[in-house]
Length: 303
Image (tube, rainbow, N blue to C red; front, side, top):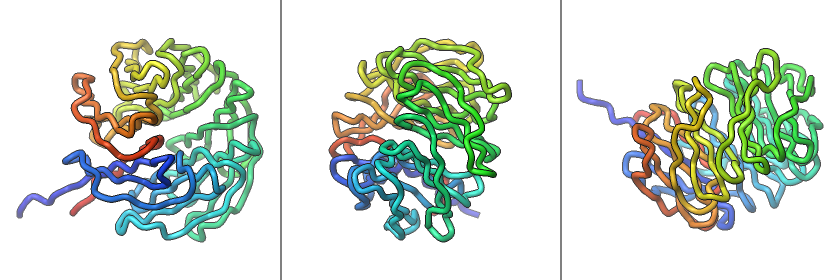
């Protein structure tokens, strides 16, 4: 039997061009562009890789992309100024953070309709869903805390105080911790997800925005938007072990399923930086369009 070719794709929102650029990670070239809504930012993918969900800030919608055809198959109206989105591990619901009116819209992904709306804290920016699907964390940038959502009841069941102006939040792959980037005090808060308290604070670069973990959970990569770098955290010691220069104003970062590469959307220089995680160096730069912001990477796809 011959070797079956496998592809992995990075989907990048391009804020000022109202598109999603699709990068083939084997060649680091843009192979497709997909028109979406106005000012696309946050982006998420279903765990099976068949759907991509894009939060369009300016027209209060979510675009649903079929990744087989790379076409928008549905446009869903949500609340005011959607900025981020996450999908349950079983793919049944998507949760959309609406920065403009402090809510989270809950989308049924079968009907592509909003089935619930949850009120959270002030100026929410980011959402992450626990690997077991039972909880979601939402950063409230105006309140310096994180809302804890029970995804079974779609209710807020608590808040966790973090640093100054929290932005991105991400769970470790095993779900035991969550890392929150605090943009004003240049730190990452480490949340123990059992006690739902902060048990460590790590100093990183200037104005950190988002966090991504390697699949084995041993390292975290944090984009520092004001000093054009990525901090690398050893998650065992919870210390910064490296700093990687990237493009101008790095925003969202994502790591490939095999953990060998990280892709960083550089908002002000039209590019995505490709990091080799074995030595933490930038090995390629991909031009994608005006103001790349969000990036998500597919699971391996058989050709």
